[in-house]
Image (tube, rainbow, N blue to C red; front, side, top):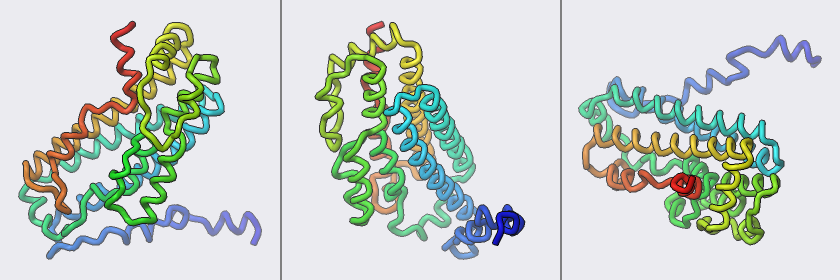
Length: 265
């Protein structure tokens, strides 16, 4: 088959696998309940955005480690915009009242957003190092997350980028065991202060990370308030702690060092 034959056979529907995509929404409730379709599509959309975030974080890490400032800025900016879309989707979910959600909630059985493997991968890419965070997932998925957690997080890649730019990032931090959680170091704090004072391009990269951190916290806050608005203080689907667990994740910055330097300028 020639290239022209291939092009003429390709359509919008076939390229995007629209037929398969539209077969993936299968409500379980009787009727089915009108709002279950919205619930399914919103959460499937989140999973697609999580897939894209994983794709973007991996590429951002490569760009940072290669010292490519402009590509790093572009990709990190895109990640922030995707997080804004994730926040906006909460607005759509909040058009569903508690009574409307409870009309089909019982059909969800033990399923829960807590079981999203892709979000755990996003957290690992951001630097979360917690053996318990994937313990409830299948073993093969745990292995995938552990592999991500054994290599550079986006913060580790940023420190490598700054070192490449001539900033004094301690070698033992650059070469640390990446499967352990990063611990703040006063020498890194000092280097970050110098970055902001003398290296505008590197400072812009750091500010993009702040945008992402703030965007993630905004999404977490909107998520917890949406859940509280929908089910109050009840146990979450799948037996999770619901609002109590979600609230515990609020205001925990991903890039703590970048927040800590704010009081030292």
